[in-house]
Length: 171
Image (cartoon, rainbow, N blue to C red; front, top):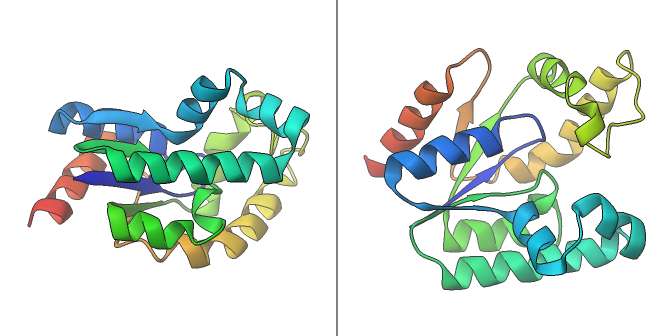
């Protein structure tokens, strides 16, 4: 089984995927880290040197390879991955997809502390961050909501979220 975690940056995909993979004894693959490793460039460097269209093509190819060739994997996807091509369809067809949902308030609180690590929001002021997130979520939720399962991460302990994921998948 492949378990794909989708959701906006800051929703907890990286943290939850790590705990989930350990609990299930599944391999953990972070799609962005995999793309970086294969291309020997960071994601911001790929965007800067080759552009977003090039990145999205790499992302699609890497996603297809992982979904076709892996078993017993927790796959943590980039926030934009479900939005491009028909990625959400192939994610749903080849894995169990889980949307980690977080409110604008939760996302703003988490992301304001991580701006230097997030090129997309690095230059957005704290006062404009909630509006930016809200606009982005409005565009992306249509894709995230296609996931087979949806779990709220607001004010919840990561262990509790992981338990709910396991419960949904194995019942």
